[in-house]
Length: 429
Image (cartoon, rainbow, N blue to C red):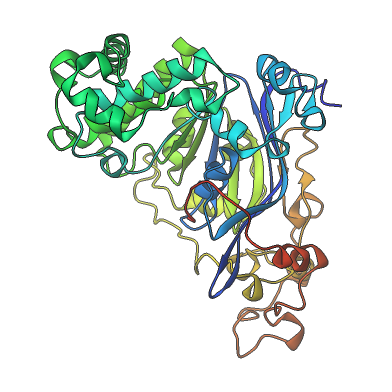
């Protein structure tokens, strides 16, 4: 039973997302566990290619072919939603909790906008350049208004709005999809996110907005359905530092005003320190350390977390040299991965025990701080350290060669045998 999770709104358990490509199976997300409390900001941080964006898109069901969620549960806590679908999906509902992977794709789609919404990385590519910004935000508002008229029917989102309806709407104002009320709400949202002269700006096209203004407009569009959970995927990418600070302040103010829960995806530790209550550090498709902001920044265990923090300039010790993590993020192709710790070949504290794949263990005896590292259970022992160059291809013992596709554990073999299922959007980071 899930009755003890009274403060959590979202829980992800054992999530696995695979991409079935011509080169082989890509293990983009490999057994991720996340728990997010209502009203918190949970940050997922890691290098590019670690699986952060795929995790976020998996949660809101935006994975498209050749991708597929192959395992795990995505639990969402909402009593009204649970009561509304209980009769048709008894196995997916437990009290106020719903396992979103146990309901139909149409039900999952119905949650987008009204319960879950997303701010994408590139606002310029997220808006239609031929339609005014105000019209696009108003459309998002109208979709939610129509869905509210019949929340159990996904057809209510369009109400048979066809190309003929669109043509009539260009001639007869009364036949337009967007109502005056929705347009008025769009202007209110533009004002809410701090866009000056919102009435005039609503009639402008995306190319007439600066990068920061367009990012604000995309946040306004994401807020159209007043979602419970807002997923922000690199919301400050390509913005200068002043605009970044303004966007983060805006998200902070909106969260306090609207009571939203935010899942923040970023590679910027400064953004994490500024925004997050809890943090998951991601590497090679796994959460390798998780805990409160203080746990991860001040009392971290995993050498990868230490490496990320060591790569950030210290304003108090400006003369100190940065300490970048050596090497590169590993390939996530199934036949090129192995059973050991995926960070071992880049780790300054790699020991013999790291040649086994580590399980997650509590760190420092804390209930909310955990890491996927042998250092949670033992101190670093230089006598057991792996020799320099151990992972170089020429010197690596035969037992530590890359594991071939037929040598992976039974779970991955079983995953590979599943043909790609019908999916609904997304991309592989």
